[in-house]
Length: 276
Image 1 (spheres, rainbow, N blue to C red):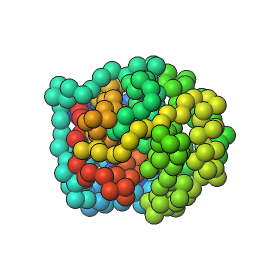
Image 2 (cartoon, one colour; image 1 turned 90 degrees about the vertical axis):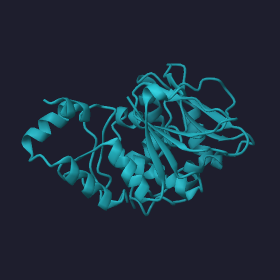
Image 3 (tube, rainbow, N blue to C red; image 1 turned 90 degrees about the horizontal axis):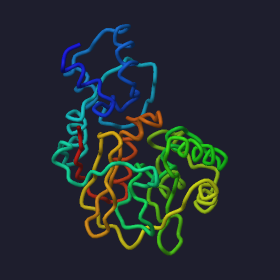
Image 4 (cartoon, rainbow, N blue to C red; image 1 turned 135 degrees about the vertical axis):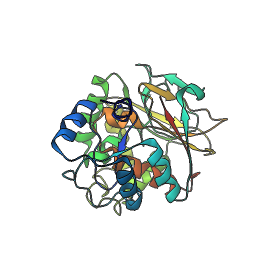
C-alpha cells in the first residue's frame, strides 16, 4: 500500500459520498476495494460534488468511493460555504476527550457545568437516534447505555429557562424539518422534547445552555479522541466527525444534516475542517 492509500484509509481522514455511501474502517475498506473495481480520487470527488451533499437517495449497496476532507471543502463551497482545512498542530482549541465529559450538543454557547471535554454531536444523543431512525424513549435509553459503555456521559440540552426546544437541532427534528433529507429518518420521533429529556436524564444528564447564539464558524473535527470545549465569549459550533464513525453512523448523512442544521437556523456558513 502506498503512503497516499494509507493516508486516505485513516479512520479520521475520510468521509464518503453524501448521497448514500457509508464510512468503513481501514480493514473493511481494504477488503471491499479488493472485491470491487477501484475508482480514481478525481472521479469520486467529481461524483460527490455533483451530488451536492443532498442527503437523498440513501443506498448502502452502491460501490465504495472515498471522499477526502479536501473534497468536503469543495462540496461545502458548492453549497455557498467558506471552508478550509486546518492541521491539528495549528488548532490550539483542541483538547483530549475525557471520560467525565458529556457527549453533548455541538452548540457553542456556555453551559451550566464544567464537564465539557466529551464528544460533540448534533443534539447530543439525539444525533445517534435520528441517524439510525430510532423514534422512541426506549430507544433513547438504549443509546444512553451504549454511550456510557463507550466511556462517555450521555446528554441532551435545553436553554437556561428550561425550554427543551432551546436545542435548535432537536426542534428541527421534532417538528419534521429534516424529512426532506430522508422521509423515514427525518420524520419526528414519538416523544416530546420534555419526554426525551426525561428519558435521557434517567440514564445520563440534561445540560442547559446560557444566553444567545454568537457562533463565528463551524469546526468539523476529524482528529480522533480530541474535541473543542464551548466558550461563551468565543463561540463556535463543534462537530466531532470522528465520533459519528465511532458510533457506526451513516457519516455522509450525518454531515449533510449538520450542514443543513446550520443553514436552517441561520448560522454561519463558515467551516474549518481539522485533520491530523
